[in-house]
Image (cartoon, rainbow, N blue to C red):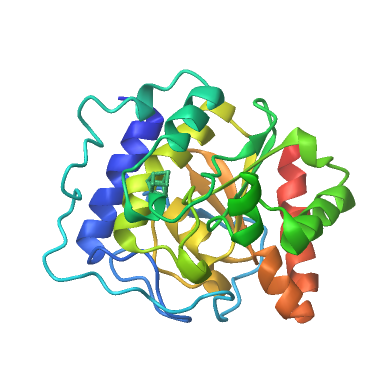
Length: 265
Ligand code: SF4
C-alpha cells in the first residue's frame, strides 16, 4: 500500500475513532491520540508548546447523525486513481474534475496547489478563499502576499515551494471545512506530499495541522515542536490570514518558520 493511501486510511480510521470530527474549538485536549501514530512528536531540543487558540476558526462543525464513515458513493479505497496518481499534474486534473463532496457545487475553480515538484518545503493551508477560487491558485491575495514575504525572509522563493490546502475547493463564506469534506479530499493532499517528498512540511492554521497530524489538539498546543508525518518533519504555525488579523502572532510565526528552515538545508 502506498504511503499516501495508508495515510488516508489512517486519517479516516483515526477520525472515526475520535468521533468523526477533525476540527475542534480552541484549547481542546486530544483524547485517544495514539503514541507512534502520524501525530507522534519529536520535541528534542525544543520548548514545550504554548496553549492558545486556533485563529481563523469559525467553530467546530457538527457531524450530522448517521454520517457514514465513507461518504455514500465514496470509492476512496477501491478503484480510486488518487493513491496511484503518477504526478502532480495528474492530481491537478483529478481535482479539477472532482465531485466527491459538496464543495464542488459552488466553486469557480478547484485549487489543487502549485509549486516545485521537487520542493524541499510543502506549505499546507486550510482551503481556498475568494481570490483563490477566482484564480485557481493557492495563497493569493493579501494572505498569499504575506506568505510570499515569509518565505522570502527564509530565502525561499515561492516558486521553490509546493503550496496547497487540505480541501481543494472553497467552502462557502470561507467556513471551516467539514469532516466529510476533509475526508473526501485528504487523499489528494497525502498523494501530493508523497510525490513531492519534501524535507519538511509547514502546516499553516489549525485545520492543516490537525489533518496532517491526525489530532484534535489546538494549534497553540501543536506549535513550537517538530512533529512527524511518516518520518517527514511537520512544523505547525499560524495561517497568514490570521496574522493579518492579529499582528501579535507574527513573532511566534517567525519562530516556527525558522524551525522549518533548519530542515531545508
Ligand atoms: Fe473534490 Fe476536494 Fe473539491 Fe471536495 S473539496 S469536490 S473532495 S477536490
